Length: 217
Image 1: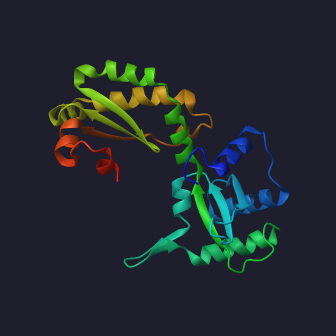
Image 2: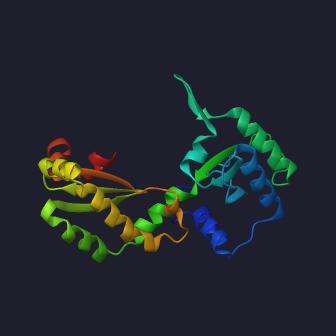
């Protein structure tokens, strides 16, 4: 689950709106998972086979931090925490979500970043233009959403540095948040900050040749 258009995200939205119920087994499992690992109760947990047919239990958690808690990292390895995954799969079977755990794995998706992405895409162009106009004297010239984040560029690097020092960047961030909040249907910004990358067209042209592909890859 990566985009607002993904069916599982749309399903989670319907659940949060009260338009779709989850099964008793799913509710029992999600309640257990939240209590067992000290995180917010997951929104959904469904059998969701991969395109190549692998057996996958897809769990939608609230935050990226919650999802990261189910991975482990060492100097040589980053991947799923197998001990936690085994415990989760056993409980899913106990709750009746799965008939077997043989060959199954768990995919952990975070709802909040996609909901922020969704809200950002709903901000009308006229609102973006209003923010640009309000801070044009400081050199702000680009507002571009990139997944759950926003890229804001000044014309020159000197303008960016000045805005960082004199508090204008903070003012821009506050204004942008005000513009996004009306489109935050599920209130995720109550517990999440908007990710904003401040940069300049000067650096964009010099370091990346004016290519958004190179800049965002």
